[in-house]
Length: 256
Ligand code: ZN
Image (tube, rainbow, N blue to C red; front, side, top):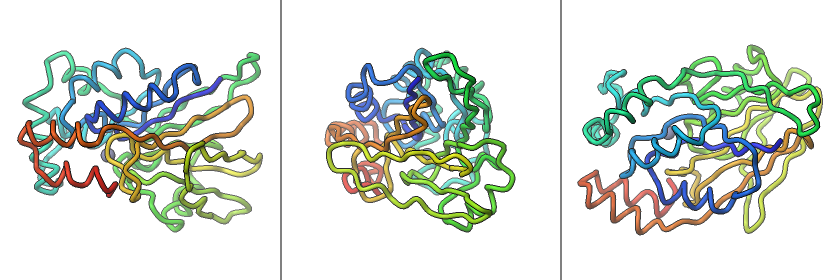
């Protein structure tokens, strides 16, 4: 089976909608790595969509913050004001769903189409060792890999598309995929461990404003990094109309 892997949607409905349109019919299930809400202007639309469509999901730090599970002191002023706004905005049903999102990492038995033994992957928001931990450097990855109990882990939180590998007790950086039109493929080698970040749907920070995602083919043991343009200006207008901090609108145009 093929899986659509998405993370850090951050209440950006237009970005999510564009990715769903671009991937229609190309996957069997969706795995979501958390941060449905926070920063963006459409928390209810995104949560309602996730309630219906995300087969497996873990919570993110902004999900916790938006339902009062976290002390907002840890957030910078912009993230804090967006979290407070989201708290007021979520409907009781959506709030309840976010409140009960499971903590990562979670194991997913990725099925092959022919019913062969499933490959177990992990999904996590931040590090598989700490849901709030950032994995951004090869050093972070080298510290993490020896404790990871799966060949393949999908993680988010940094909003940086890419990932790391572990081979012969050494960690390496897979690098930032350079995506023009088609996706960039990566064949997964046996005997190598991978930490894969699909990037962020709703607030990319790798200097490419297009929404980021990954398609994983469990039969072929390969994955494809993708980017997808969406109507950034429409989301910026919604952010401003909602009275959210202007910097949240500005950063979407530059992807940082
Ligand atoms: Zn995030």
